[in-house]
Amino acid sequence: MENGLFNMKITQNQLHQEEPICLLVIDMMSVRAHVNLNSFYLHELSSWKPVLYISAELEDSYKNISARRFGERPCSSGIFDRLMAGLRVISILLRQRPRQVVFFSYDLLTFPVISHFAAFLGIKVLCFEHNTAPRTRSRRFLHHAMSSGVKRLVYGAHIMPLYTDAGIEAIYVPHPCVRPKESTGDDSEWREIVADHGQHSKNVAFCPSGSVTLELIEKVAVQHADTLFVCKSTRSSSVKNVKCRKYFEAYSDALAGCDFVCVLFPLEHKVSGPVFEAIAMGKPVMVLENAFGQYMKSLFPGAIFYSSEDIPREVVVSVDEYNRSIICKIAEGLTSTLGTLGSEGR
Image 1 (tube, rainbow, N blue to C red):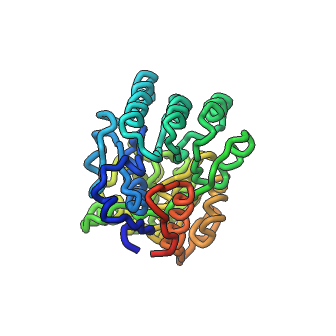
Image 2 (cartoon, rainbow, N blue to C red):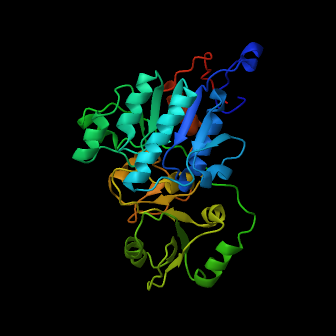
Image 3 (cartoon, rainbow, N blue to C red):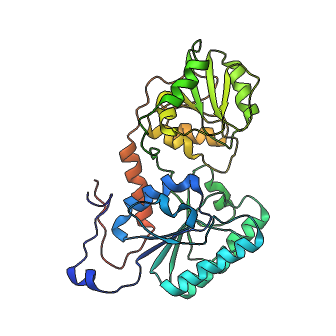
């Protein structure tokens, strides 16, 4: 189907009218690691003609997308910076008066005021929950202080109980499986690593998550002496089958070249983007046997494994069908006044 998964019919007269923005998208925190994910959403929801507000540092990362500047830098954790970001959002809503606004990320501290201001203007609000789960008393208070009209999209079924137990309405929409940026065509970086350290290794594991400690990887690596673990870390390891790099220039080539991806994600109430990128690349993924790992195994039973289990040798996941179902769920959360959106497949 043209323009992503959905097609919206707009009359010739409508094209020439000066109308308010149908779908305004704001990424308050402007996280660089979310560029690939956000670009996927913007492409698949292109029928709404979304307009994105993003920090100046990331503006050039969004190609063929109507992007506008939201501050010079990503929002920091400082109180003043967060308050100023909140005021910028209010200014944008007041100036643009969109019919609906999607927050790819938001600041939990200022969002209660933002959400009530949007409700006052009659703007529908939908937000993705990135590290904003109500897992503490103060977070629950801030969620309850938001406008009742806010629609929250939660990435994991294992996270949903935090919302339901707190009496907070939320919609479970899984994280999509999005391939990383196209290969550079130069896999010399990865070949160099394997050539130097992987000659005697049965398997090579790629550990791309910065949220996983080196100590945790080393503990598993000792148990799998026949596997070379290549990690993203600013430190070096004394374990002979663990090799570290501060940064991978050819990230997609590393994903393509490894035998499996290792993401020992310790956080119970978040999800890990690299796991879904690995699934999109057809790679098996080793995870911890915790709430996140159990959730991932229930989602992709043939691709996810624990350190005590054998590596799956064939990963079969219908990524297109899986992603299509996610976009359909997001579409249900959006209300368009420009016409009826189709729900048929590509």
